Image (tube, rainbow, N blue to C red; front, side, top):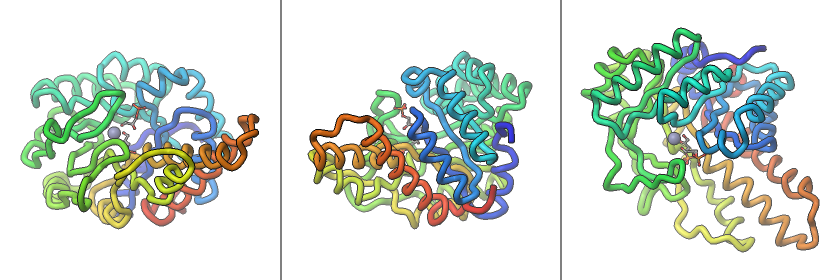
Length: 309
Ligand code: G3H
Ligand code: 13P
Ligand code: ZN
Protein backbone atom coordinates (compact mmCIF):
# COMPACT_ATOMS: atom_id res chain seq x y z
CA UNK A 1 0.00 0.00 0.00
CA UNK A 2 1.38 3.50 -0.83
CA UNK A 3 1.69 6.25 1.78
CA UNK A 4 -1.65 7.95 2.46
CA UNK A 5 -2.60 11.43 3.59
CA UNK A 6 -4.74 11.86 6.71
CA UNK A 7 -8.15 12.52 5.11
CA UNK A 8 -9.62 9.01 5.24
CA UNK A 9 -8.06 8.01 8.55
CA UNK A 10 -9.38 11.15 10.30
CA UNK A 11 -12.87 10.73 8.82
CA UNK A 12 -13.07 7.17 10.14
CA UNK A 13 -11.54 8.14 13.50
CA UNK A 14 -14.01 10.99 13.98
CA UNK A 15 -16.98 8.77 13.14
CA UNK A 16 -15.64 5.86 15.20
CA UNK A 17 -14.79 7.91 18.32
CA UNK A 18 -11.13 6.90 18.38
CA UNK A 19 -7.81 8.62 17.61
CA UNK A 20 -4.85 7.87 15.36
CA UNK A 21 -1.47 7.71 17.10
CA UNK A 22 1.10 10.14 15.69
CA UNK A 23 4.49 8.90 16.82
CA UNK A 24 7.77 10.80 16.33
CA UNK A 25 10.51 8.86 14.56
CA UNK A 26 14.25 9.49 14.67
CA UNK A 27 15.96 6.20 13.83
CA UNK A 28 15.46 2.64 12.63
CA UNK A 29 14.68 1.03 15.97
CA UNK A 30 11.96 3.61 16.68
CA UNK A 31 10.36 3.10 13.24
CA UNK A 32 10.50 -0.68 13.66
CA UNK A 33 9.14 -0.74 17.22
CA UNK A 34 6.16 1.45 16.28
CA UNK A 35 5.33 -0.21 12.97
CA UNK A 36 5.64 -3.76 14.31
CA UNK A 37 3.10 -2.85 17.01
CA UNK A 38 0.79 -1.31 14.38
CA UNK A 39 1.08 -4.38 12.17
CA UNK A 40 0.26 -6.82 14.98
CA UNK A 41 -2.75 -4.75 16.02
CA UNK A 42 -3.83 -3.81 12.45
CA UNK A 43 -3.79 -0.08 13.22
CA UNK A 44 -3.66 2.96 10.92
CA UNK A 45 -0.63 5.07 11.72
CA UNK A 46 0.98 8.50 11.47
CA UNK A 47 4.78 8.59 11.61
CA UNK A 48 5.89 12.14 12.22
CA UNK A 49 9.22 13.79 11.64
CA UNK A 50 10.32 17.02 13.32
CA UNK A 51 12.83 19.48 11.87
CA UNK A 52 15.24 18.18 14.51
CA UNK A 53 14.68 14.57 13.44
CA UNK A 54 15.29 15.53 9.82
CA UNK A 55 18.52 17.26 10.81
CA UNK A 56 19.62 14.29 12.94
CA UNK A 57 18.77 11.38 10.65
CA UNK A 58 18.50 13.03 7.18
CA UNK A 59 15.29 13.23 5.14
CA UNK A 60 16.22 10.43 2.73
CA UNK A 61 17.18 7.94 5.45
CA UNK A 62 13.91 8.55 7.29
CA UNK A 63 11.84 8.25 4.10
CA UNK A 64 13.57 4.99 3.16
CA UNK A 65 12.99 3.57 6.65
CA UNK A 66 9.31 4.48 6.39
CA UNK A 67 9.10 3.00 2.89
CA UNK A 68 10.57 -0.22 4.30
CA UNK A 69 7.92 -0.19 7.02
CA UNK A 70 5.22 0.16 4.36
CA UNK A 71 6.50 -2.93 2.58
CA UNK A 72 6.73 -4.89 5.84
CA UNK A 73 3.31 -3.89 7.21
CA UNK A 74 1.01 -3.09 4.26
CA UNK A 75 -0.80 -0.62 6.55
CA UNK A 76 -2.24 2.85 5.80
CA UNK A 77 0.64 5.03 7.00
CA UNK A 78 0.91 8.83 6.71
CA UNK A 79 4.29 10.54 6.96
CA UNK A 80 3.84 13.91 8.59
CA UNK A 81 6.04 16.95 9.27
CA UNK A 82 5.76 17.80 12.97
CA UNK A 83 5.86 21.52 13.87
CA UNK A 84 6.88 22.92 10.50
CA UNK A 85 7.88 26.53 11.14
CA UNK A 86 8.14 27.93 7.61
CA UNK A 87 6.66 27.60 4.12
CA UNK A 88 10.09 26.52 2.82
CA UNK A 89 10.38 23.62 5.28
CA UNK A 90 6.83 22.45 4.48
CA UNK A 91 7.51 22.70 0.73
CA UNK A 92 10.74 20.75 1.06
CA UNK A 93 8.92 17.94 2.92
CA UNK A 94 6.03 17.91 0.42
CA UNK A 95 8.48 17.82 -2.50
CA UNK A 96 10.34 15.02 -0.69
CA UNK A 97 7.29 12.74 -0.41
CA UNK A 98 5.60 13.59 2.91
CA UNK A 99 1.83 13.09 2.75
CA UNK A 100 0.94 15.49 5.55
CA UNK A 101 2.52 18.59 7.09
CA UNK A 102 1.97 20.76 10.13
CA UNK A 103 2.52 24.47 9.77
CA UNK A 104 2.85 25.78 13.30
CA UNK A 105 2.11 29.50 13.27
CA UNK A 106 0.77 29.38 16.83
CA UNK A 107 3.40 31.89 18.04
CA UNK A 108 2.35 34.45 15.38
CA UNK A 109 -0.40 37.07 15.59
CA UNK A 110 -3.75 35.68 14.31
CA UNK A 111 -3.64 37.34 10.87
CA UNK A 112 -0.01 36.28 10.25
CA UNK A 113 -0.81 32.71 11.34
CA UNK A 114 -3.69 32.69 8.84
CA UNK A 115 -1.55 34.07 5.98
CA UNK A 116 1.29 31.57 6.52
CA UNK A 117 -1.05 28.60 7.01
CA UNK A 118 -3.08 29.49 3.90
CA UNK A 119 0.08 29.67 1.79
CA UNK A 120 1.12 26.17 2.94
CA UNK A 121 -2.40 24.79 2.38
CA UNK A 122 -2.46 26.06 -1.21
CA UNK A 123 0.84 24.36 -2.05
CA UNK A 124 0.05 21.18 -0.09
CA UNK A 125 -3.43 20.65 -1.52
CA UNK A 126 -2.10 21.08 -5.05
CA UNK A 127 0.11 18.04 -4.25
CA UNK A 128 -2.53 15.90 -2.46
CA UNK A 129 -0.97 16.61 0.95
CA UNK A 130 -3.05 17.37 4.07
CA UNK A 131 -2.23 20.21 6.46
CA UNK A 132 -2.48 20.64 10.24
CA UNK A 133 -2.56 24.17 11.67
CA UNK A 134 -2.36 25.32 15.28
CA UNK A 135 -4.16 27.89 17.40
CA UNK A 136 -3.16 28.49 21.01
CA UNK A 137 0.31 27.82 22.38
CA UNK A 138 1.55 24.81 24.37
CA UNK A 139 4.16 25.08 27.09
CA UNK A 140 7.26 22.87 27.12
CA UNK A 141 10.32 22.07 25.02
CA UNK A 142 10.06 21.97 21.22
CA UNK A 143 13.12 21.81 19.01
CA UNK A 144 15.29 23.19 21.83
CA UNK A 145 12.97 26.18 22.34
CA UNK A 146 11.48 26.27 25.81
CA UNK A 147 8.02 27.85 25.98
CA UNK A 148 7.32 28.84 29.59
CA UNK A 149 3.92 28.33 31.21
CA UNK A 150 3.53 32.15 31.26
CA UNK A 151 4.07 32.32 27.48
CA UNK A 152 1.65 29.48 26.75
CA UNK A 153 -2.01 30.18 26.05
CA UNK A 154 -5.20 28.17 25.66
CA UNK A 155 -6.95 28.11 22.28
CA UNK A 156 -9.75 30.68 22.02
CA UNK A 157 -12.78 28.75 20.69
CA UNK A 158 -14.24 31.94 19.17
CA UNK A 159 -11.29 32.02 16.70
CA UNK A 160 -11.44 28.48 15.31
CA UNK A 161 -14.19 28.79 12.67
CA UNK A 162 -12.58 31.82 11.04
CA UNK A 163 -9.13 30.20 11.14
CA UNK A 164 -10.31 26.97 9.55
CA UNK A 165 -12.49 28.59 6.88
CA UNK A 166 -9.92 31.21 5.86
CA UNK A 167 -6.92 28.83 5.77
CA UNK A 168 -8.54 25.63 4.46
CA UNK A 169 -6.59 23.44 6.91
CA UNK A 170 -7.55 19.77 7.22
CA UNK A 171 -7.03 19.50 10.99
CA UNK A 172 -6.34 21.84 13.89
CA UNK A 173 -4.06 21.45 16.91
CA UNK A 174 -5.42 23.16 20.00
CA UNK A 175 -3.99 24.01 23.42
CA UNK A 176 -6.08 22.72 26.34
CA UNK A 177 -3.38 22.30 28.99
CA UNK A 178 -1.06 19.62 27.62
CA UNK A 179 2.61 20.50 27.08
CA UNK A 180 5.64 19.03 25.37
CA UNK A 181 8.23 17.00 27.27
CA UNK A 182 8.26 14.87 30.42
CA UNK A 183 7.25 17.51 33.00
CA UNK A 184 3.68 18.48 32.18
CA UNK A 185 2.04 19.14 35.54
CA UNK A 186 3.42 20.18 38.92
CA UNK A 187 0.22 19.22 40.77
CA UNK A 188 -2.82 17.27 39.61
CA UNK A 189 -3.19 16.82 35.84
CA UNK A 190 -5.91 19.09 34.49
CA UNK A 191 -7.12 19.59 30.92
CA UNK A 192 -9.67 22.15 29.67
CA UNK A 193 -12.21 19.73 28.22
CA UNK A 194 -14.67 22.63 28.13
CA UNK A 195 -12.51 24.25 25.40
CA UNK A 196 -12.34 20.99 23.43
CA UNK A 197 -16.11 20.60 23.71
CA UNK A 198 -16.76 24.17 22.51
CA UNK A 199 -14.31 23.77 19.60
CA UNK A 200 -16.06 20.51 18.64
CA UNK A 201 -19.44 22.25 18.76
CA UNK A 202 -18.20 25.08 16.51
CA UNK A 203 -16.49 22.71 14.02
CA UNK A 204 -18.75 19.66 13.68
CA UNK A 205 -17.02 16.70 12.04
CA UNK A 206 -13.65 18.50 11.96
CA UNK A 207 -10.54 16.63 13.24
CA UNK A 208 -8.76 18.13 16.24
CA UNK A 209 -5.15 17.31 17.21
CA UNK A 210 -3.69 16.95 20.69
CA UNK A 211 0.02 17.66 21.06
CA UNK A 212 2.04 17.01 24.20
CA UNK A 213 -0.01 13.89 24.88
CA UNK A 214 2.54 11.48 26.34
CA UNK A 215 1.47 9.88 29.59
CA UNK A 216 5.07 9.88 30.90
CA UNK A 217 4.52 6.27 31.99
CA UNK A 218 5.57 6.08 35.67
CA UNK A 219 7.11 2.58 35.23
CA UNK A 220 9.65 4.02 32.77
CA UNK A 221 10.43 7.04 34.94
CA UNK A 222 10.99 4.65 37.90
CA UNK A 223 13.20 2.41 35.77
CA UNK A 224 15.27 5.39 34.58
CA UNK A 225 15.68 6.65 38.14
CA UNK A 226 16.53 3.12 39.39
CA UNK A 227 19.22 2.60 36.74
CA UNK A 228 21.21 5.78 37.30
CA UNK A 229 19.01 8.43 35.70
CA UNK A 230 17.43 11.44 37.37
CA UNK A 231 13.94 12.57 36.40
CA UNK A 232 12.25 13.63 39.63
CA UNK A 233 8.75 15.02 39.20
CA UNK A 234 8.24 13.76 35.64
CA UNK A 235 4.49 13.62 34.95
CA UNK A 236 2.23 13.23 31.91
CA UNK A 237 -1.36 13.12 30.72
CA UNK A 238 -3.34 10.31 32.42
CA UNK A 239 -4.57 7.66 29.98
CA UNK A 240 -8.24 8.10 30.88
CA UNK A 241 -8.02 11.77 29.78
CA UNK A 242 -6.61 10.69 26.41
CA UNK A 243 -9.44 8.14 26.03
CA UNK A 244 -11.95 10.89 26.76
CA UNK A 245 -10.32 13.26 24.22
CA UNK A 246 -10.31 10.48 21.59
CA UNK A 247 -14.03 9.90 22.12
CA UNK A 248 -14.61 13.64 21.46
CA UNK A 249 -13.29 15.58 18.42
CA UNK A 250 -9.62 14.59 18.86
CA UNK A 251 -8.55 12.38 15.92
CA UNK A 252 -4.73 12.62 16.26
CA UNK A 253 -2.76 12.18 19.47
CA UNK A 254 0.96 13.09 19.39
CA UNK A 255 3.43 10.94 21.30
CA UNK A 256 7.17 11.39 21.47
CA UNK A 257 8.31 11.64 25.10
CA UNK A 258 6.93 8.18 26.00
CA UNK A 259 9.01 6.65 23.19
CA UNK A 260 12.11 8.42 24.50
CA UNK A 261 11.42 7.23 28.04
CA UNK A 262 10.85 3.60 27.00
CA UNK A 263 14.03 3.58 24.96
CA UNK A 264 16.13 5.28 27.63
CA UNK A 265 14.82 3.00 30.40
CA UNK A 266 15.62 -0.14 28.39
CA UNK A 267 19.13 1.03 27.46
CA UNK A 268 19.96 2.13 31.01
CA UNK A 269 18.84 -1.26 32.37
CA UNK A 270 21.18 -3.15 30.03
CA UNK A 271 24.13 -0.90 30.86
CA UNK A 272 23.66 -1.21 34.61
CA UNK A 273 22.91 -4.93 34.66
CA UNK A 274 25.56 -5.78 32.11
CA UNK A 275 28.42 -3.24 32.30
CA UNK A 276 30.63 -5.24 29.95
CA UNK A 277 28.05 -5.21 27.11
CA UNK A 278 29.25 -3.29 24.06
CA UNK A 279 27.25 -4.75 21.17
CA UNK A 280 24.71 -2.03 20.18
CA UNK A 281 22.21 -4.71 19.16
CA UNK A 282 22.13 -5.87 22.77
CA UNK A 283 20.83 -2.52 24.02
CA UNK A 284 19.05 -1.14 20.95
CA UNK A 285 17.21 -4.47 20.57
CA UNK A 286 15.64 -4.27 24.05
CA UNK A 287 14.90 -0.56 23.42
CA UNK A 288 13.02 -1.47 20.22
CA UNK A 289 11.12 -4.24 22.05
CA UNK A 290 10.10 -1.80 24.79
CA UNK A 291 8.83 0.70 22.20
CA UNK A 292 6.79 -2.06 20.56
CA UNK A 293 5.25 -3.00 23.94
CA UNK A 294 4.45 0.63 24.76
CA UNK A 295 2.90 1.38 21.36
CA UNK A 296 0.85 -1.85 21.36
CA UNK A 297 -0.72 -0.81 24.65
CA UNK A 298 -1.44 2.71 23.37
CA UNK A 299 -3.06 1.48 20.14
CA UNK A 300 -5.30 -1.05 21.88
CA UNK A 301 -6.08 0.50 25.27
CA UNK A 302 -5.68 4.28 24.89
CA UNK A 303 -6.23 5.42 21.29
CA UNK A 304 -8.76 2.74 20.38
CA UNK A 305 -7.47 2.45 16.80
CA UNK A 306 -6.44 -1.23 16.90
CA UNK A 307 -8.23 -3.21 14.21
CA UNK A 308 -9.15 -0.06 12.24
CA UNK A 309 -6.51 -0.21 9.46
O1 G3H B 1 7.03 18.50 19.70
C1 G3H B 1 8.17 18.09 19.85
C2 G3H B 1 8.52 16.69 19.52
O2 G3H B 1 8.69 15.95 20.70
C3 G3H B 1 9.73 16.64 18.64
O3 G3H B 1 10.87 16.94 19.39
O4 G3H B 1 11.96 18.69 17.97
O5 G3H B 1 13.24 17.42 19.73
O6 G3H B 1 12.51 16.28 17.63
P1 G3H B 1 12.24 17.37 18.62
P1 13P C 1 5.07 14.68 24.05
O1 13P C 1 6.27 15.45 24.47
O2 13P C 1 3.99 14.72 25.13
O3 13P C 1 5.36 13.28 23.65
O4 13P C 1 4.40 15.42 22.78
C1 13P C 1 4.90 15.16 21.48
C2 13P C 1 4.35 16.11 20.47
O5 13P C 1 3.40 16.85 20.70
C3 13P C 1 5.00 16.13 19.16
O6 13P C 1 4.48 17.11 18.32
ZN1 ZN D 1 3.88 18.90 19.33
